[in-house]
Length: 389
Ligand SMILES: Cc1ncc(COP(=O)(O)O)c(C=O)c1O
Image (cartoon, rainbow, N blue to C red; front, side):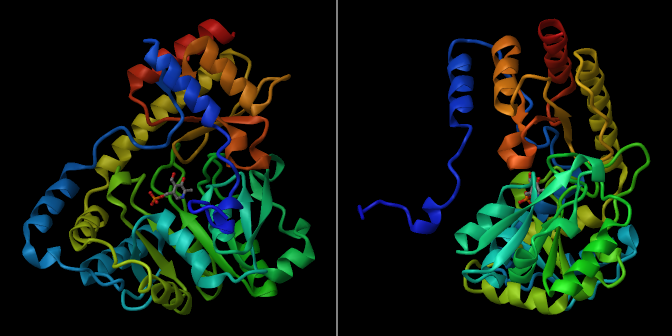
C-alpha cells in the first residue's frame, strides 16, 4: 500500500460522478460564458438581522469563547424545547431529550459511528442526502437503499424491504419535506415507520432539515409528534435552511433519551461541541419572529412557480412541491439524468442537478434549486424556454 493511499473504507465510497460536469462548468466560465447555477441548495438571502445581532453580542462576550460542552447551553436547549412545543406540539425535556449538533450533516454521520458495527445495515432513502449512504460506508457498515416511489408520494414501500436487510438493520434514515424530491410526508407514513421500527428493533432517524420551508398553507409536522416516535426515534433539526444559516453549522438532535446519550458519548470522543455564541444566536433564531421565514417562503414560492410554469412550457410534466427549496422533475424521453443536465448546460448555460447524483432511484429526474435571486431564475427560465422548447 502506498503512503498516501486512502483507507479501504474511504476507497469504498462511490466515486464522485459529476467531476466531469463541474469541469465543463469551470471551462465555460473561463471562456466568459454566463453560467447560472441552479444546482446547489444554499439560501441566497442573508441570515435574518436579529440572529446576526444576537451573534455579534454573544461573540464579544469572553465567557462564550471557551470550549463548549457537547451537552449544550441551557438557552439553546430551552429554546429548542419551547420551539418544539409551540411549533410541533411535541414535548421535549431540555435536560435529556435534546443536544446541539454541528449541523445535520455532522449529526447523521456521527450517528452512524454511534450505532453501526461492521455487518450492520442502515436503511437509506433513495434518492437521498448522500450522508445516509456515505456515513454507513465510512463506519464499515452497509447501506441498503429504500427506493422512494413516485406512486407512493415519494415514500418507500416498507413491506418490500428484504427481510434479511431488515433483520440486520439498526438505523433507518427518512427525511420529509424531502431532498431531493420536494415531497412532504405521505399521509400515515410516519405511523408505519414507528410500527416498522418496533417490529425490527431499529432506531429511526428523521432528518428534519426543511420543516420551516413549506408553501400553499402546508405546515410540516415533526416525526416526533407521531404516537410512539420518541420510543423508537430521534429527529435531527437543522437551522441551516429555514433560517438562512447554512454557514453557521447550527442544528440539534431531539427525541429518544438513550439514543441521544449514545450520540453524546460518541461526540465527546470526536469534537468539542457547538460554539456557544452560535448556540445563543440559534436560541435567538428559534425564539424570534416568524415574519422573515414567511417572507422567505413567499420568495421561494414565487420562484417555484416561475420554474414550474417554464418546465411545463417546455413539455416537462411537474407538480409544484409543497416543501423544500427544490423542484424535482422527470427528464424528457430519450434522456438520462446526466445527458439532460449536459444538454441544459450546453444549450442554455444553466446548471441543473442530475437526479442520479442522489442515488439510483434518482435516475430519470433532475433537480432545480430555488436559492438563486429572482432575476437570475427568470433569466435561466427564459433561456430554457427559448432553447429547449
Ligand atoms: C436532507 C438534508 N439533510 C441535511 C442537510 C445538511 O444540513 P446541515 O447544514 O444542518 O448540515 C441537507 C443540506 O442540503 C439536506 O438537504
